[in-house]
Image 1: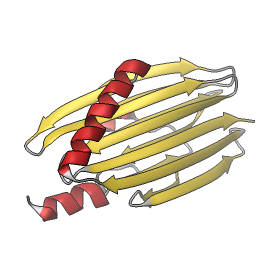
Image 2: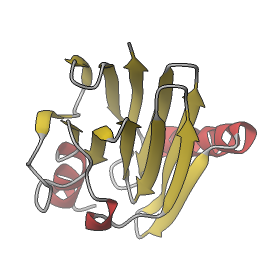
Image 3: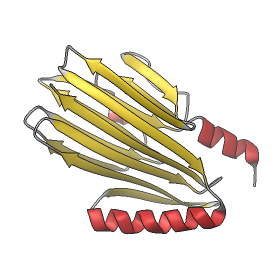
Image 4: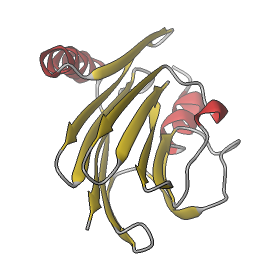
Length: 180
């Protein structure tokens, strides 16, 4: 296995919060979903190994981008950005939108057997929950991305799972967009 490729693909993962819309045409989008709350509209997009979330309230937006590269990413309107290695929790208030944003991220490197078991469990979970799913075959094995979205009266919860066969990388995140 080429460990250089592994290090670049897994350690470059970053979470970025924008206080604006991010144009989805900048990314290799594979699926799109939309849900409404009394406060606004959440749009979710899966991309290979990542996702883009956009919560719109009264024509204004906040967006979360989870991506495995550093280049070609818009920097206008960035509120915060951090690498996803390990465990992180982040909370930010966007007073102009009346929005509270929270993000929890956890990454793991699994052995080949543990990765295969986790992949199987996530496929079962996605089928059971009716999740948005993107799968791709790579020389290292199967990559899987899953988004679960729960919409409530004034908030949206998004659980994301990105599994990358190269190196047995698993990224789990939980995002909360809450309108005050």
